[in-house]
Amino acid sequence: MKYRRYGTTGKQVSEIGFGAWQLGNKQDWAGMEDDEAIRLVHEALDLGVNFFDTAPNYGQGKSEVLLGKALERKRDKAVINTKFGHSPEGTDYSASQIRNSVERSLMRLQTDYLDSVLIHNPPFDVLDGKYGHYQVLEDLKAEGKILAYGVSVDSSREMLEALEHSQLGVMEVMFNIFYQETAQAFQAAQEKDVALIIKVPLDSGWLSGKYDENSSFSGVRSRWSPEVIQTRAKLVEQIRFLEDEHTTMTMAALRFVLAYPEVTTVIPGVRNSAQLRENVAASSAPLPEESLRKLQELWERDIRFKSLGW
Image 1 (cartoon, helix red, strand yellow):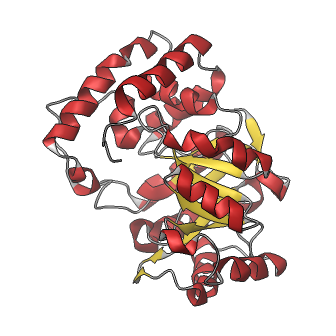
Image 2 (spheres, one colour):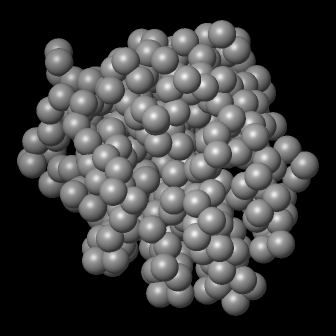
């Protein structure tokens, strides 16, 4: 496993992180039992993964609870990122709710500090700080309850707005082979020494290569229209060149993200030990420069101006 600096926190984090959305999430990840989730976190630590991404609303709080149990005696070995805005009680971006949300996360995670807290996909007008969100987060940082704060967003416009109006230290952004728009703001983040966490690196499963035009979806993935499914299926076939006897599409997709030096860590989801080990294997070698160039050209030529959604 390779490690990268987590912004100004002084911590080193594994470039392959652990997306904990699935822990306790029975609606979209059926079959994840509590003891299995805890074993998976322990196995991740054994494989060198030390970055864990969660949120209060993942599994209605169950993700944080299970992560807290798994890390109960291993807290010093982990870097934990959680969020504010969506919770088991609903969605509330009021600045006055930040402290309460953080306190609840601390309890669920069984810890007295959080390495970072992000405002979770907020409305655009929150990003300039006029409602006092950043000041509350600065206060929590001064108290030692959080080491860093930031935002989780989906576009370069949102990234630049937050960078301009705050002293944030972390950003979580959507970025993958099929969605490269946010790369436009990577340099701006790097110039401010902001850690970049990459979410949705496998395009919700499409970049694992396991879906095609005949795939059917339920839960959160039912958002895709037949047209979008057809388009994505064709794009998957265009990138089959990434696979060989030593490299799966998943590994190549994660290496694509890690080819950008501004990126700090990438957080694919994990359902079982095999997926975890496949994710970790992506850290063993870089993406060939020629493959990176082809994927960037694919984005510019065939994807950038299409409305694929996420």
